Length: 334
Image (tube, rainbow, N blue to C red; front, side, top):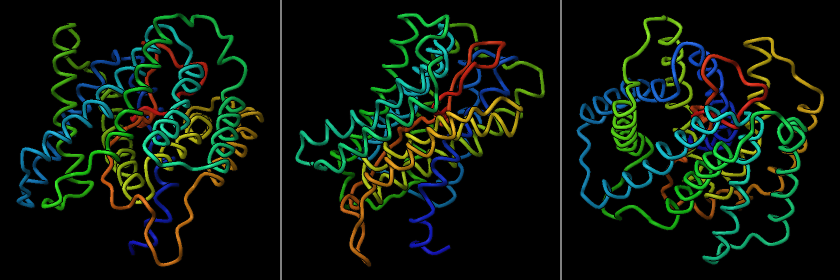
């Protein structure tokens, strides 16, 4: 696969993989609390990544490790914990999706304060994308029962954490002497996330995994698609297209998550969700950067960090209240 082809395909892969976190979270929700699922996702993923980078004989300086540790804490641990806790507190998943979808607009506003202005075209695209999200999640996202201040606060904190990672990853370039890629970021950030969720799970008495094989199917899904695929594509798209562009693509994840739910679990796919997807896609097409032919995107020199995410999340896509499927789909659980 050539770099040019991957660069054009990466945003679509990002949306699909980031949204896949919903499926993994749905598999695990009836048999394990969110904290347990998040812990064991990284118990599997982090050692795998460490083995890979050791086999490749990668070496990291203290400045690089500090940068990736901060970005991983914000983009993976902070984001996922906030969204999963929001749904556990009773916030409808559609509302969580709507709150998390404020991220692209927030990132654009913050970046404009640092001289990265997108003009009227970007503002219009962000507004259209957000309108599509509102259509995709439907009116139940705002009127559904069980929504509380605590859940909304957790969702907003998760969104702010992901936004901070996106902005900081662009404004804080990696050491010029160290030429590292997405693989290196995933490895360091996964270790940081593992440490965070280990502390949370052990302190809350939720570290032990259930014996149900469904749980391990969910973990395999979350590691393979939501973590490696979702966060890997998030980092790649941010590096090649910039923080506003990668955040704006996440506008599509609520509707794509609904499509996952329809295909995997037979959940209803309302016409309004399809319409919302089309509207969000129009907003993304307006905002996306259009570099000159043969030249990289303006922000390709930057090294980004997740978000991570999500997603999901994702993962990919995210949390669901224990023991029951959500009424609406989340933006990601990566």
